[in-house]
Image (cartoon, rainbow, N blue to C red):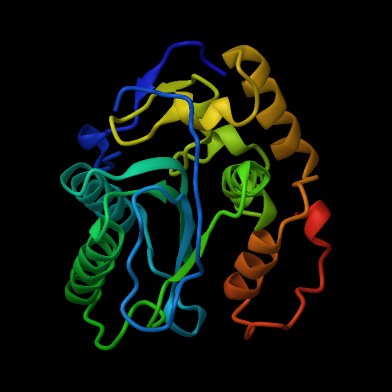
Amino acid sequence: MSDTKTSVCRLSDNRCAKTAQRPSPSYRRDVGRGLRVFDDEWIFHLVAKGNNGEAIVRDDLDRGMFVWRLDTVATEHEWEIFAWCLMDTHAHFVLRAPEGAASAGMQELLGGHARGVNARHGRVGHLFRNRFFAKPMADDAHVVASIAYVDRNPVKHGASTEPAAWRDSSYRAHMGIETEPSWLVVEQALAFFARDVAVAREALARLVFSGHVPVSDTITEVQRFEEGLPPGILVPSAVATSG
């Protein structure tokens, strides 16, 4: 593993990847089924999944298109992303955004990507499941669980044996391997694990490598969504040892 930092924005190889403050999330109500309004004090775990489990990216060019669009949307809508990961069939985001910006940004991100993939691959119809998953974090422990779960996702799903080898996630920036984009609030994310950055990175890496993600009803619901299960159906694998 190289000690040299590289930028998340990798336009040359067709891949594109606020002042840090002590996070103090406040969450007061659940997400409804109507028009979803995301309060700017909340941190949410969002998941977008391919329709009927279909791949949302088929090759590196699709991945580059998605990450480029994410960079554009997150910048324009002032998203603060604590963790993210793009997999073949779904994508995770742990984020906070100005009121209205999460829904608008997700619509722009997913809609734009779907149109691009459909045009490129000659497909028609919905690329994404009709509604993306959205869950507000109940407390700091839920944020810790979600960040670790998202960074571990490539290993959990067997896409990589080494989390740092997966380019399309926040783990490399969290570990200081590459420079984070402006919308990835690494210092704020690490502050949930420890005040000292080195200690925080060690704590996050320990959770990611061990797979012992803290038990959280958020992660339980995320797993149900990933597996295409309706609410209330337990995922067979234990939440406490995801992956």
